[in-house]
Image (cartoon, rainbow, N blue to C red; front, side, top):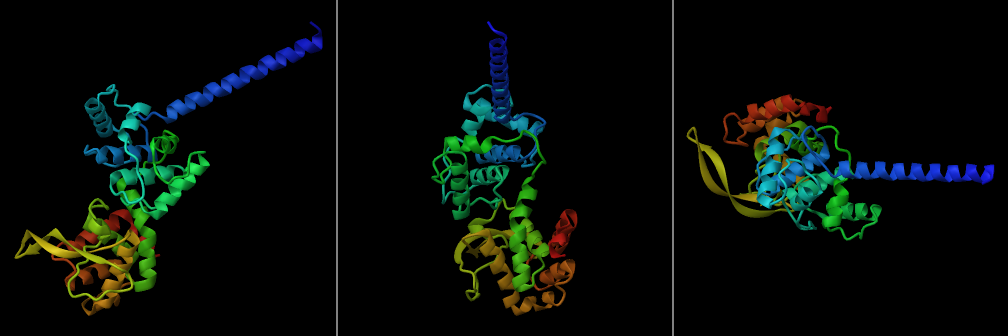
Length: 324
């Protein structure tokens, strides 16, 4: 064989070896991206924790794959009849995300979808409502991933959404809730003068970090004797706890329900500014702690420690930053 031909053959062999190596690396990366185990952090872990909760397995949403999540995964694998490794591989994830998700769905699976959309760079609000914005975000992601742009999260879409880095900043349930409600609280401050930090703390206090908000009511606003405002709402009967004569009792009352978190936040601002009994609070709305105490004095809640609880949340999470 002539020397130029030898050189050409060697170049072709080198190119083939490099291509094989690149394919192997890509394959390994894909396999790693489809596995989560102890020590992993980030949005993929957060999504898995939401899915575990959706299956009735109580696990804290911390964004960190620690002992509790490892045990929860093992328990899920045991009851699903798959290998008990405590690691979320492709088969385990497929079981966790076995159901399609689509517009109109509600619940923790929807939060998992919205969390994975964040992983893919789409900052759709994370709540339990598969709304139009979520459907549009899913359809856009599907098109970018060469999938049918149906807006429905089927098995292939779940798998594509789940691919991402194993590690990243831990994103807790509290982080997600505050990041979701913050822009609406700021909008409410601009429109109605309610400190954003107070609105956010009240939403935390009333719903347990968004865990319990029937009818998208994040502030426990009731329906009695109130005229409709600029934000539409309906009314529903719900059980609630009230303080009477120094003890907490369960009663049934009528509460507002809304189409979205944003509607709830804005109606809450309108509710406060439209009621004369809360007028003293707006004279001190430059001081969130004073505003919270004025709300309690005006009878917003029957819990005698209500304002102290709000101030503690504002202090712990530095919610004052949203009013600066």
